[in-house]
Length: 280
Image 1: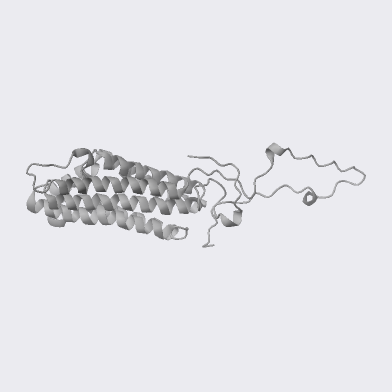
Image 2: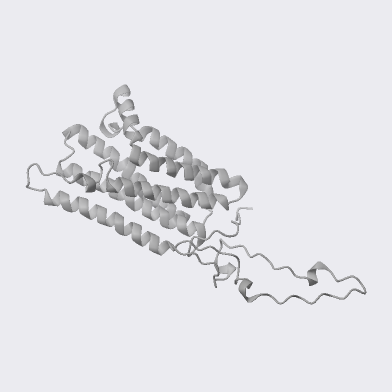
């Protein structure tokens, strides 16, 4: 992580930067008649203003996406490789730490960290957004933070079990937590999607969210149907389905983070300037 206090990139190339104009003595008005104008002080070389607006470059999106994508790929390869290795070996089980679909393992930690990272980026965007939209960015940030907590606490499993036993859900709704989760996703999308689409990188974020939801909701529903019919979470078919679900979730998080980093500051995450609302 590096901090760059002087950037050579101009403000026109960086939409997240606002140029702070210098004070012009001539624009402040002429000196009173008879008064001698003070000689301008020679600027110190140590405090020369940087070209363009002030920047604080914290990280580079390309590197972040490459590292997180590589981690997700390694976790998926480990799971599917172990699943293939177990074919024809009775009693073999994918080791818990690398088994996608398990709770409290490496992939759970990684997904939780990714959700927290996205929550942090959304909070930074909220801090520089126009006031009338700020609460929506905060809502998105809080939603990511809550999902990060749920990844490790597995509260959705408990909620799903309560709904399943109370209403007797079955088939694609065996994992019944997807019912309230889908409703909440639709509400948040209705509130925030129009605002989101006005930002650069928005369609990358939408694509990432779609991939994540395809795994988290779509494949989860299919997994519930398969589990209801077989009841064997160690079967090869179920492990393939669980691996595909978690892989989609991790891939969606990586794609969404790439879009959020682009949204936050172009070529690097920069805390500077304000967002100009193009809808006005």
